[in-house]
Length: 515
Ligand code: HEM
Image (cartoon, rainbow, N blue to C red; front, side, top):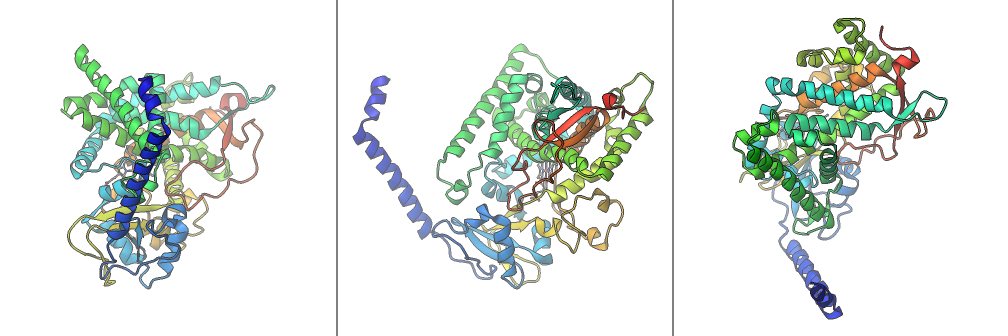
């Protein structure tokens, strides 16, 4: 083996290998240039400002919103075409563009996402997409959610007990400090595994941690280079593949162990096995569901207490709501607030926390940078409403979500966090179709919405029932400077660039516990 390695390391051989790789890349680039199709007739006007040869519109991945707004302003209809590598993308805007994007049944969401959202392993084939959505929908029905509810409560209790046991921020103080994004990520991930996966993962801290790291990497190691050059084996892509193999081995082992021992486990994973799904389909389902479940739910679960901590009216309102539910369902005086929450049914979790729900709705409206994608997979032009323009066959479509979520025509003072806007002051514009895109709109509504709402509500109700919290630095010093604004050029919502901390203390200690 060592001879082989020394042999391969010889300068001539290294040189030959490098030359071969460079020639392969060179000829692929040449092919890319030669085979780029010209703009089809009737496609919206092409936007080429700042384009690079071969690559095309690099700003779409570097400064997406800036490029999009500039391009849409440059055309009469607000629609425009551009190339990313060889891929033709039509950017839609305006009412006709928006209606086409969200209502047209011939535009494929799975193909659009698979090709343009690298990092998120969107189901590539239509058959798998059908299977994925069918299984997810079944798992998130009432009987299955009721089945995992006690695990949700127990996991949440354990996580919050851990917060109580954490060391004090400073001697002589009663504050402790957490990074809400780290805390929520671990807990939300565990709950999502409970709802869609295997107990062997949810209940083994080591496996939970290692799979969480791999699932986070699917998103964190997005390789935009591969969107331009799908054939390029980038390092990030290789790491994603490696993580895919490791996840496969973990799930394959669980399946084999269960089969060998003849043991059946009462969890969603067993349901997939009993339904006869292949190992490949189970693994692909688990990865897709866990990635979809992790990204948005975690970030919003962590942002809610941050928003509340910076807005005294909201903080008072959420406390009132949670304390009200605790008082309403308390069966005996010796029950702690968390004990009471442990007794709530699925229906009570889904109906008693309206302000948390409104806060989530508002957090999503504010935290939805980037574009949604579709692809015209038919052989026909798809008309863009009555504009006279079309989406040609084999073309991708994008819609900048901020065009709606931050529209001053729909939302007054759109950059302010104000959950009450959905409660009172609902304007005529807010009642129009496609005026809120937070959970999707038209033909594609989020299939995980019920799970996400349940998770975010539950973890935040446990938090508010037990703790006072404020923004702080990592040492527990109160923080007064405002958070940096959300980077609207992001492709999707993420943690703030600078870490944000919450200091917290038990409400029993501070004397503000619900009586
Ligand atoms: C706060 C958390 C979440 C937010 C804000 C969110 C948001 C969205 C949005 C905006 C869409 C539509 C995308 C488009 O039109 O292109 C969508 C679709 C989808 N979401 Fe979520 N989502 C969340 C959580 C989840 C979870 C937990 C899961 C699953 C475990 C999930 C699974 C899906 C799926 C499968 C679709 C595609 C639906 C279809 O193809 O019709 N989401 N989500």
